[in-house]
Image 1 (tube, helix red, strand yellow):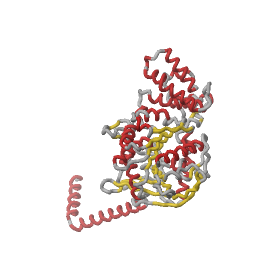
Image 2 (cartoon, helix red, strand yellow):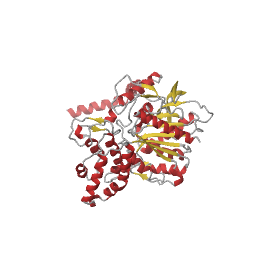
Image 3 (cartoon, one colour):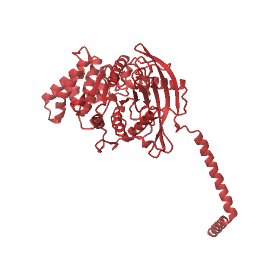
Image 4 (cartoon, helix red, strand yellow):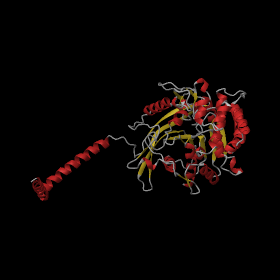
Length: 521
């Protein structure tokens, strides 16, 4: 009985559906539902916060005094729209620029600056380094909450160059547009391509093709700069200079089973031990202990590590004693670590007797862990001490100048995003690198453009990108003698963010002024 009733009901339904009136009624109901859904989607979309396709810009003027000279400048916050080969908008890059008029009739240089990450916003360089206004820090110590100490920057570079600070895609206010997925930007070559497009766009719309052009990258921004310089050159934009701040050029040094990383870190260990007064026969200045450690790392230490398990007990003892003299660590601890002291262990061990750890970005900073017996610090005291100051002060400045957006300013593009490292870089010779080594790009572009001048700025207390590792990478580009003069190194008594130290920032500004002046000859 149930089967017959169900069949009868189904037959009536099929019959009704086959009649025009029933079909029309069903169609109308479907259309009303779709219209309601579309209206809901429109209402939701109207409240979505997206980056602008039409490029935004907000400007104001200011003045700053540098070395007794007052310089007027224009500050601009805006966006640059990136497009694919068909002209479709794919992304919006946020920037802040500082420009000044020429005073001698010569074309003013323009420098593009960015932080690293990968995927970091550029508020650190923007608020801490060479812009006409900066936050005041007296590191190495944690800074206080608001109100924020933002003042005129006596060490701005506006007297030597215009500056454009760019946020990486997905960081700051930079965002993909339309249906372009973030994954189209989250890889080494993809990231380089986005920066190349942004720089080209800025140069084009601001009519800067005939002006000297420089790029300035910090941390991960340094391997980006090497590949970016090559890409821009390949696309017809020859740069005047590449500025590398706190560099890591070859990520291969960190591969498991290799000793290169231990060697690259060693002179930084010695500098840190000198600063914290852990060296018995302490020289008067840090440069002296650094040079001793550099010679040891290049000689006996490298030779000992290369022997692996073939090293003799006598040589093990000798090398451990020399390491102890330069780092303040006990020979017994060094030998138990097989002469290979990881960064985490060093940061925990050096001041363990004081229940104190040292920073990674800047080893002068100290912190306190809950567990003083652990083998690694629980946090980086040199990082946590400044974030609130930088974020709050930058957003306040944007608000003051009237730049309005409902977007959230992201410190990093990597929040919830998958950055693709593997097989992510095609080298100039066409090979695909499993681990990025952009010294291949930098050496290639320095040979292609023999006028390109590269300067590496290094902090003695930077444990994230140690200066000796930078030397090792850049000095293995095997440049011809005629090109070696185009590569120079500068050193400061500071950490990864050299500009946190007012004295180091001042010296770095003087060094950079000379660098730009030499390029203008």
